[in-house]
View 1 (spheres, one colour):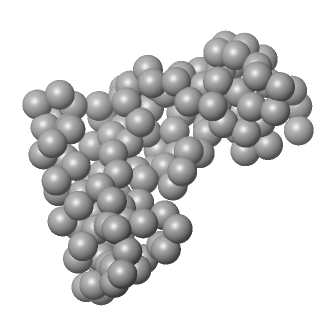
View 2: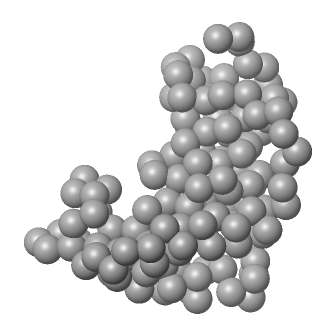
Length: 130
């Protein structure tokens, strides 16, 4: 793996989402990344008990905000060479892709995740990015 440099555009996972961002600081075993776009929307629900709905706290998870900064382990950050999409459009696309995955099969988890995703969209995204 080649060494990344400050200012490089990178792909970086955070929790269950994946983002495009600018590498802004080297912090020993981590990079500080400024979010520019969303590639994959975070999963809804309990990250410690994925795809379960019984006996868990079902969290609503929103994507990291535009220009939000996040520490990411160096080992999972990769150089990103494609054009960086506009944040709002990338968020819409990531939500649509996640919704399509959830609608594919009517499981209890998918139904709860769709409800949570709708709340996230209405609470955080509508009016600002939509």
